[in-house]
Every structure is written in C-alpha cells, then in structure tokens.
Length: 253
Ligand code: PEP
Image (cartoon, rainbow, N blue to C red; front, side, top):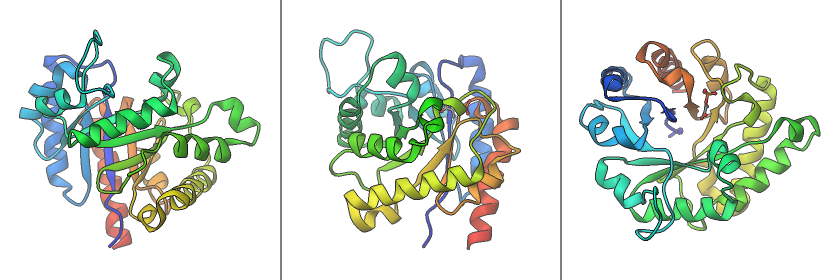
C-alpha cells in the first residue's frame, strides 16, 4: 500500500471569522477527494470555529509550546490546541526558526509534546539560498532533519515538509530534479534513523506550490503531498492542488 497524499494549507497570520466560509468550502473539496488527506493549519483564533466547519478537512495549529503549562505568556500548549479541535500541528517552520530563533532541539521537543497530546506533526526543514548555491543543500537539510526528529518518530503521527526557504512566498521553486534529489536524500536520512519506518513516512514539498506546478511536483516518487501557504487561502486556489494529488494517487494505484 502506497503512502496516502497529504495536502495541508498553512494560513500563517491570515484569516478572520469572515474567512470561515473558505474553511467550509475547502472541507467540501476535501470530501470530494477522499483519497487525499487534506488539512488547514489555521491561526489559533480560528481553530475552534474552524473545527466546527471543517467538513472532511482536518484542522491544525501552526506552532505549540514544548511544555504542558506554565508561565509562558502568549504561548499555547499542544493540549490546548487539541482541546480547541486541532489534530495536527506544524513544527519548525522556517519563519519561526528564523524569526523566533527556534533550534532543532526545540523543534524535537515541541514535536514530542504534540505527540503526547495526541496531535500529529508536520516537521519542516529547508535550506537558505546561500546553502543551495554552495552545493550543500542535501547535507544541510538532512542534518537539520535528523537533529529535529524526535527519537520515537513514526509515520502514523509525523510527516516531514521540505520547504526551501527561498521558495516560500516567492513564486520560485527548485527544479523538479532538485526536489527529487532532496526528497530521496531525506528518505535515506530517515532510514538511517528509523529504518523501514522511513518508507511509510510522508515527505511533503512546500514553497510556492500552486495549481500550475502541483501535478509535476507530486509526480515525483518521494513527494507525498504539499504544505501550501498562499495558494491555500481560498478554495478556488487550493482545489486544483488537491485535485492534482488525487490524480497522482489514481495514477499510482
Ligand atoms: C509555507 O510557508 O509553508 C509555504 C509553503 O508558503 P507558500 O506556499 O506561500 O510559498
């Protein structure tokens, strides 16, 4: 049995109650494409209301704290996200690694905390343009993945997202060959840590994925779906990506 494609929107700091209609519309698109697992990682303020209108899509958070509770002003624990209705959470997004100084160890702890709270994890990794230009992308990203991977990582609760930092929100993507090389390198790195479990673990591509490039990206053997920012904000833009994932699933069956 192959890996089920996973397509997840990351709304970042976008979305007010008025946008819950889009959540509902995306939930309907998810219901129409049952072979694909579809989710939306919403701003925390929308998780509860979004969970009530999610249809066949799951709702996730975009970050969690590594502790269950405590004096951490402004933070949310994984348990809190779960209580609000989130069943997934993103950890290690480059916008947090860079702007908030999150370390690989922090990300492993947050992922572990999410797992303990019963939440699945999308663990993000990716290189800067300088690293890619230096020809070190595979080595640097594989090292980053192994350093932020929790010890007991397993495919039934954790997926990896490869997101080249220079491709996020820029409209640029790596060549398909570069994506294939990276995803194969990440699967090999996973295998070195978790053995045969690596074959079951989904590795998503993220960074300027849209309705025009999704089919080509998801045709790559080790690309098991997408983490999508800008193009997930409306059902109109997100639907073609979900559709492309379903077509790839059908072609591989
Ligand atoms: C992201 O930030 O996770 C992302 C993939 O953004 P975009 O699709 O807008 O490049």
